[in-house]
Length: 490
Image (cartoon, rainbow, N blue to C red):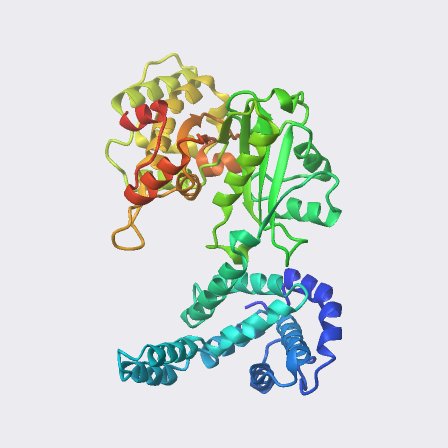
């Protein structure tokens, strides 16, 4: 286990240290919390418990409560990974719901006369109070601190990783998720257009958080903010310096099918007033600690509304999306030796292409799955016209099958099964339809590794969004174009 403070936490400690130091200095009784051993041995763990108890006691009013929360926050950030795990385990185990108190409150509720409405309300309130763990009251106190919400968002990001192997932390992670879900309700978020004139610190975070197509430099970012491009982000009023999620848009004519062309800084710019299509080519969640708190669908709908108002000629709204799980799925099918993965015609065409590529002039029989597997594991075929032509049919057919037909079991009984690909699930949930597969739409190393270069357009037709959303959510039905339906039947 790493015993050093992580670079991200170290940076935040330096940033928030001054902010919170002045607040923390206003409280007494925080003995030793400013000089903890980073591993948090038991002697120092006792000091953490005393600090947590002081916070819960709420002595001295609002100023003292903020000061104690600041002191605990600074203590948490001063720990290494081992120490932070111990801190979180104390919070999870020792400040959880008091089960005896819940049982007593529930028993009292069952004894209340069902006709006595006032007594029932009072007994139900006591049950609700008993169900709330003390740790939740502690977490709320950080909301009053400068950047306190960001502190909790980052804490949950760490909890999500740790809880995978530590079941004791899962209840604490759920509590924090529910707390953040209330604070990050869509009604509190503001949609902002980000331009080259936006604060440099904010633009730097866009570069850092871009998760789909790496922003290689400031010049690259400037190109993505050009007059025929748009970048929109959701921002929370208590985290104005941080994007929550952002989308990059290219204003073009017709569906774009190649990300290299979209990102090519040397290509001529288009007058956005003449564009008829908005291509959403990158959507990035900027805060790992907000995973599972969905507002991406609202982002797309609000951006569509804003673009429709600004550019009346833009009537087509589509993504140019990666297919991150396709290659892994295909590798599993090949490893399992799935029968019938390639059609007889595809085997024959691939065998002929291999012979043509070898240049031996011989006619060979149909290719095997081993030949197919060996080809896609390398990248040489991309530069060979015979091989690329022969691979196009099976790979696009299998990719259509993966996106539309491959499902994961429903999480709850009575729910429809959802598609396997996470990006497809996101857009289908939001009411898009699978419109077109784009052969070699992403020739980057990343694009070849995760989807053999394929990309997909998800089309948002304004008058079909609600119908598509309801069909997918209720019945698991995927809206597709005629071309995609043809591929899935092949």
